[in-house]
Image 1 (tube, one colour):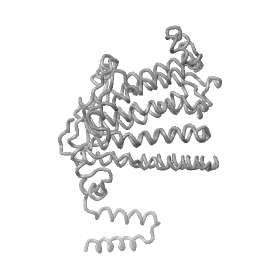
Image 2 (cartoon, one colour; image 1 turned 135 degrees about the vertical axis):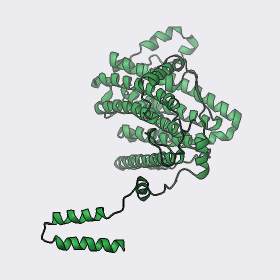
Image 3 (spheres, helix red, strand yellow; image 1 turned 30 degrees about the horizontal axis):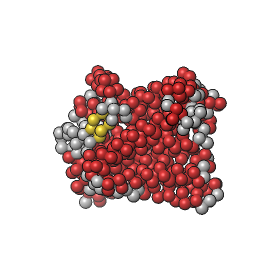
Length: 451
């Protein structure tokens, strides 16, 4: 009856205003339409516009596990204990509004790294543009050093601010962990440019890329089994980021040529035993010396964690490391078989490596929080295996370049869609917003959930 009456009103209005312009007729009709609509409350608007969320990555059991999750971690770094943590605590207490969401602090810090990455990419579209002979402006490395310190400080602040405001949640841990993983490969690219490493120095590039991501994955794997994140006395989030910033400032001050000199190695040589000197090369640049030290420290940490986990939980736990091993091995085999694949797609190749790493390590972290079995087989590794097959079959380079471009585009789309869906599901399950700790969520119980 209401619909019929509404039609009569509109039709009657149209007949009465047939002599008016069409704009005036439309205005009168719309006015009649909205005047005769019943008033809608906020709840009715939300119910009509929002459909029930379909969970694709969280099950009923995993949602309950997510709600019961308790973070347990310890950072044994002296730098963190006496400098970084007190600084972050002071800034949280005196310079951070209580209305700011912790995830906003995390994202704000990551934005600094993205600015530094964009500046370096502008001057160094390829690694060959960033060698010492090209004389890139030094201020981009000054900005990178500042961005690293800002990112590190804000990364330490977000957790303290979350505990202060009572807004700690598994979502915050997942968000922070994911951006740390993204920053790992962003920092890798910036380090390669900072050192002025040419694309033909594949050994140094492989070492820096692998040794930056490997301890991150192994630490997450260890946390999956032990339910505690243990950071050693010297670790990446503390000494690693701070040391990276110091090296950036050194590059700004001394120039990239500094990393291709041999003064440090020459200063160490007189103090080494003669039995060792015979096995060492006559000259080693600062870049290669850095790669050697990084490899030794990384493998010591990785092997130590692997030994502890295997000792407590059995040799079968090693299977979960197979995705990271496959990523590293396949990447090395592709570069060894046809270096042109990397040389012609330098940044894109590292982007694919880094994004695949991010997908794997965040999936492992999510399975840890939801108490699910981590599946070692990752769909994101299948295109990489196909690429290795194409390289092994000696497919022409122009087709390989097209494949790498499509691979990178598809991978980025998949990771972005998956990440958005996971965050949305976590927000719905926990009854919180990602970047808002003031507005109540429709699924919230009305009480702040403390971790």
